[in-house]
Amino acid sequence: MNVPNEEGVLPKHTEKQISVSQSTFISHIRPRFLPESAINIVYTVCLGGLSFLSFIVLSVTGLLLMFHYQPGENTAFSSLLNLSSVIPYGALLRNWHYWAGQIMVITVSLHMVRVAWTHSYKPPKQLNWLVGIGLLLLTLIMDFSGYLLRGSQETGAAANVAVHIAELIPLVGSQIAQILFGRPSPLSGSTLMAYVWHCIGLPTIAFWLQFYHFWRIRRDGGVRPL
Amino acid sequence: MKRLPIRMLIEKEGIAALIYLALSLFLAIKVVPGVGTSGQAPLVGQAAAPWIFGPVQVLLFYVSPWISAILFPFLIISTLVILP
Amino acid sequence: MTRRLHYTRREILLRLSWVGVIVAGSATMGPLVQYLVNDEDGVRSSLVIFKKQLEEDSPWENVSSSRVWVKRDKAGIMALIATCTHLGCEVRYHPEKKQWECPCHGSIYDDDGNLMSGPAKKALQRVAVEAKQDGSLVIYTNKQVGSDERA
Image (cartoon, rainbow over all chains, first blue to last red; front, side, top):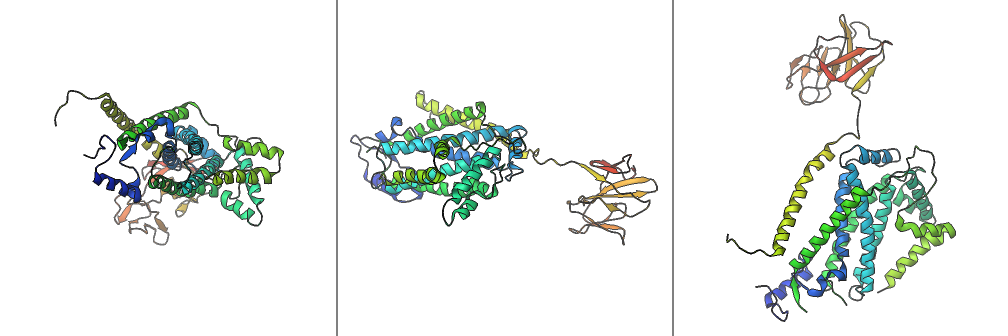
């Protein structure tokens, strides 16, 4: 039976199974056994897992929203109003997408605080901490680009401010601004560039980074207090 | 330290997931995020970014854009990076 | 399968949660289909306007940017939709042969739109026309009428 005996020691062959799951990418995803303290809810509050769940919710609702939303300075706002009023369950999907996004920003930040608090970034987990910082930045940029896609006047102002800030960077500023935000009109921040980044570019990068993040956790011995 | 089967973690995560879904759906139904002002309405002239960027916006008010929007975030990020 | 007399609280709660999840999941299928099928974000009017004057017995004239063709004969004005009744390609009018020919699978219709040959089975569709007071024509592309109807 693959159950630890009284002292918590496992039969020999399952030790091998554990080492296999820790070292291969595909079978890493879940270990077979965990130390009791790692499951303690007060320790992690499931923050990392909830961030991933938020990501899934955002991906699904976002994909569905893409069927009725149209980017562009003239069509973005009206398609958004359309979604919120006329299309059945459009308002629900849009609201859920928004709230899942805000919750994701909160859980990712709290997760970072938790990891810093419990010193879980110490060696050998430094790379994973950096990956986590990268994911935090991706989350924030997705938050901002998603906000721009509303196409309202406030987003037009916000996009123009962002473009001018980016243009402050010497030499490559205006190119960076163009790549990140496109050319937003003064009245609408919704551009094709922001749309593609928000829906395809950033989520794809975030998706693969998240799985790498999870794998590193397993490879470095799992979630545990230090 | 006792080692518990993964099933127990999955159960806890399942409960957390259900709570999260219920909470987020409740928020989605009850609290409607605004859409902002249409481009065809009279000019509002207010630049607003998501709340998490609030501190940057306040800083932009008082201090040059270089410091508040490029240096300040860069300092925060490098502090985090240097931590380990 | 052995029947047990005692189930733990945990097992019952787990089973109930699974049932709840499955019920909630299947309940979202209907609304999902409704959401995806809805087309109120791309409404197009079914009305087409034609402003030029038609002479009697002139050949079929196309209303620009549409598949509507109009013609006036001794009895009045009629309108036809140049969509092949086989699979929906746009048929081309050949005024020298007085025929409609479909470029996709070769269906041929005569000048009145009746089927002459080809994989199609029905004649070209005629639709209702109304002559307004200022001389322009309004064609209702959703209202099918018989080939004898005239405005």
